[in-house]
Length: 92
Image (spheres, rainbow, N blue to C red):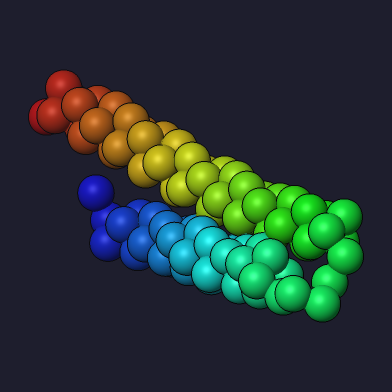
């Protein structure tokens, strides 16, 4: 397979992983920061905790979606590469 195929896949996977990691970090900071504050109304604590959990879930889903796109890209390129190389070997 050409080098650019794996480089494109890496270029997709790295932002996906970073999205997940930073989303988890930010979500936990938002959720736990509001839950540990004592002067905040309990209903507001619950809302802030839910927003933090939502942030974690959304960033994880986004990262997973990008990783699936990278996997499909690799699958497609490997399939076409094998198909064209098999056609070339039959022609020879």
